[in-house]
Length: 109
Image 1 (cartoon, rainbow, N blue to C red):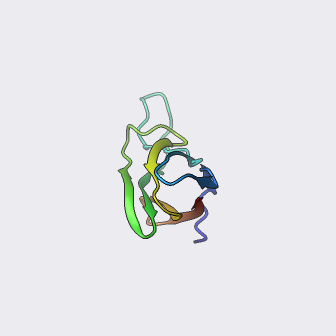
Image 2 (cartoon, helix red, strand yellow; image 1 turned 120 degrees about the vertical axis):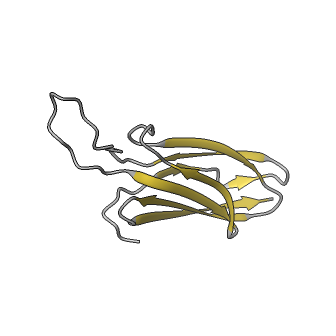
């Protein structure tokens, strides 16, 4: 998906043992500009990510709706217990409907 959004950074192990919980870290470089400024600042156009979805083997395992209180460069950490090898898909969508997608695979031995 070519969208003009930055490429996300994902830290996920390449392999795991059956039954092991793995840690997944994601960072999406984005200014998360709310468009709200104090009286002494010029207006800045709103530019926000609105949603992050993570799927494992096609099933949604994590979803977050991002709002005004979300900091710039949203960083998420979560854990997943694996029983078998898995394909992960990460999708971030902004308020203009643009998306960026990343994938990763974890082999279970």
